[in-house]
Amino acid sequence: MKKLFNGMYKDKTVLVTGHTGFKGSWLCLWLCEMGANVVGYSLEAPTRPNHIELLDLDMVSIIGDIRDLDKLNKTFEQYRPDIVLHLAAQALVRLSYENPIETYETNVMGTLKVLEACRNNNIKAIVNITSDKAYENKEWIYGYRENDPLGGYDPYSSSKACADILVNSYRNSYFNISEYKKSHHTLIASCRAGNVIGGGDWAKDRLITDIMLSVSQNKKVSIRNPYATRPWQHVLEPLSGYLAIGQKLLEEKVEFSDAWNFAPSDEGTITVEQVVKNVKKYWNKIDYEINKATRTLHEANLLKLDCSKAHIHLNWKGVWSSDKTFEMTVNWYKKFYENNKVVTDKDLKEYIVNAKVNNLEWSK
Image (cartoon, rainbow, N blue to C red; front, side, top):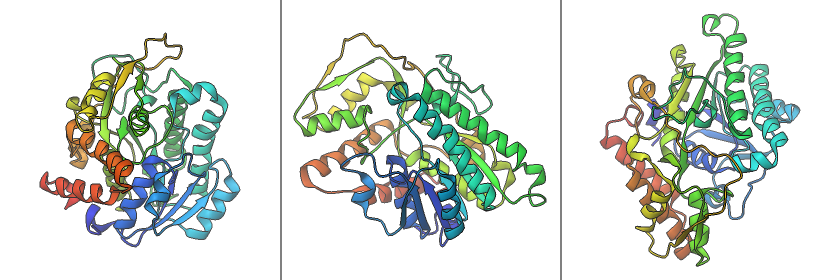
C-alpha cells in the first residue's frame, strides 16, 4: 500500500484537521497504511461510538479548535507537516440553521486561521476540503463545474462558499503560482465533493446514519424530503481524489493548485427514497416511513457536479457503483451491530484492489 500515489505519502508528516470526524478518520487510516506520520488536530469526537476511537490508529491526536491560531501555530511548529489536509468543519446543514454563528466562525474564520498557520510555517502543500453545496445552486440538471459561481442558500452552504473564496484569495495573494519558488513555496488546492456514505458515521441528521441507528434499535426510520436527488458515493471515492491532488502538490506540479470536483457518475445520483429501498436489499430488518410533516427548512432538491477536469487531468474516477457503495456501507454497520466487528481496513483493501483492476493512476 505504501506505493500508492507514487509512494508520495511514505514517511511524510501529514496534518489532518478534523481527524475525529467521519471523513477524517477514514483518511487517517489510509495515510497510516501508506506509511505517513499522521498528526490529527480536531475537537473531541462528536459522537459515541465514534470511528476514530474504534480504529485505534498509531498517530498523534491533538484535541484543539481550529479557531485557536496560537495552538495551531504551536502544533505546526512542533510537527512541521509536509502537507495539510483541512477537513475540520461544522458540516451539518440543519445544525447551521440552529447555530449560524458557530457555523461561520468554524467554516470561515477557522479556515482563515488554518491558512494563516500554513503561511506562518511555510507549509509546502495544502488541500482544503469544502463541499458541492458551495456552488450557487440553480436546481438545474447539469453538473456544476469548478469555474461556476459559488453561493449558498443556507448558512452551511454559504459558509463553505465563503471558505472557497477565501482559499482562492490566499492563492492569489500569498501563494500565487506565478511567484512559486520566488516569494513562496506553497501550493494550495480546494476540493468539492457530494454526499458521502460508508461505515463509521454517527453524525446527527444524516440519512444513512439515521437508517442504521433505527435498525439497530428495531425502529422505523422517518424519511424527510424523499424525492430530493443527491449524488451518493462511498467516502473512499473523494478521499482518493484528495490524496491524488495532495500527491501532485507535493510533486510541485503548479497546475494542480486549483479547485477540483469529486463526485459519482449520474448512476449514483438518486432520490432519498430510492436510497432507502437500495439499502433495504442488504439488511432486511430495515423499515421506514415517509415523514409527511411540512418542511420548515430549505434543502436543495437537485445538486450534481461535473468531474470532467478530474477525469482528464488526474485520471480519477469512481471505483464502486452505487449498488456496491450501499452494499459495503450496510455490511459495515451490520457487522458492527451484530458481530461487534470493525471492517474499515478490510473495506479499504478491497477498494484498492478494485481500483487497480480499473487501472486508476493513483493505484499503480
